[in-house]
Length: 246
Image (cartoon, rainbow, N blue to C red; front, side, top):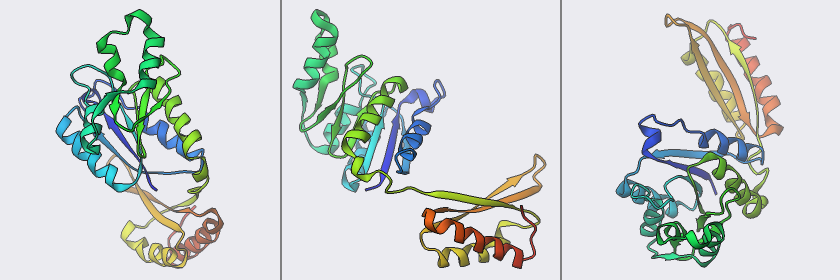
């Protein structure tokens, strides 16, 4: 079970708003010992969104989808989830109760549309305004407003995935290597990666404003039990290559 994310909305792709969901989700997963495997930004394009959801439903991944679950003409997520899952949309009785409790006599048909979810969906409570999101299979659909989405995602994690907590707990260590290009460090990276299969060896070059190389950050991340030994082996390989580091 990998964790993925869809972040939906033209307003992000045209630059009217800056995304805050990705950084939040990475942090929420990390503090529970989990990791995000992938993320995708999508505009308000029903055909593209339905196709993306159909692929992700088939993957078996746990997916958090942010945005597009309102009732305005540019909100397509609920309808596209129904198309992708081949399930009809219905007014969910729990969602109807929440929306009527929120609006009382002002619960218009337009507002009740926000509670129309694909058949088989479960609601995600919204502690901010009571208009719920929904879960379908291992996909979880929340609003595009970060102040609403954040507590809803954390509720899903804490109530549905606690058994996975600490599954992906990882550690990271690195050094700064000077007077070396990334290609010169490949043999050391390959050797350490082969010796310690539960860590990932990475490199991140840093360049000056004039394009000159400053240093390469070289490190390992992964199983905390192997990271210390892997880092020591990487230091030794760098020293054997004659490259200064700190």
